[in-house]
Length: 300
Image (cartoon, rainbow, N blue to C red; front, side, top):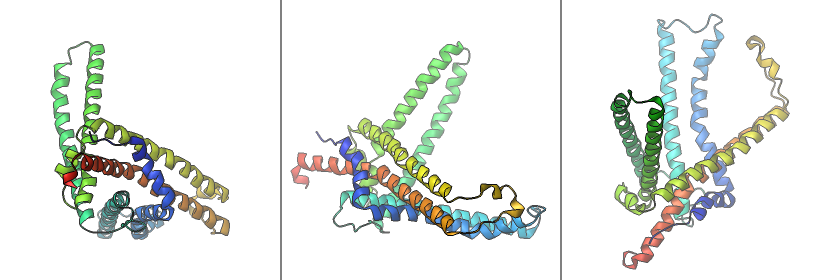
């Protein structure tokens, strides 16, 4: 029977961090670039609004409406680029787990695999939204049917329904979690291949996903603490921020070093959390694929 080692899958992200620290750092930088670029694009509009002591111009003013539309447009572009970068980096992590010797040092590309990955993610997200709406429509008649029951029993019923719903969500997460990886492997919309690969492994895959999410938090929280410590040691005069009219900041070397270290920690932590989040799914898929090949050598 095909199976996979959860310990090996969860450790794959940390193994990648140890072997490719510069790639992990690059991923973190790239993940923040769209947001930084978006803030830089809308900063002049925000600055113009803050510069007016009376506050932003009236919404009936054509210039104010135009500025607002431009801000919304730049924000939409920034969000779209962020989703694209996340997909490219997610595929890079998967690629490095599946083919570590032929994927380059960072695994970054933009091609058919990335396109398939994005389409699969959109389809799965839409399916989740549809199921959420159906579940909400189901909850209404249930609530109407049980409104005359004793409140204690209502709590028990809703708790049981919540547990069942969460269990179904975990099962669906585990059963569909390998579709994206299969799409990268086959460079096509591999819904059937990913679904079939996860057969009999849904609970284990869901448990792995929960543990990897916890590990992401464990990895990122110390990084946030180090970033805050770096800014704190820079000796910023936070009292200067109390009065917006006298808000000035002199970029002394210690401030530049403090903020530079903080950004470095944030970039590295984000890249590391990304590796820890994506690598286990690719590792589990690779192990299950190897088990299937051993069980059916004629398919190799």
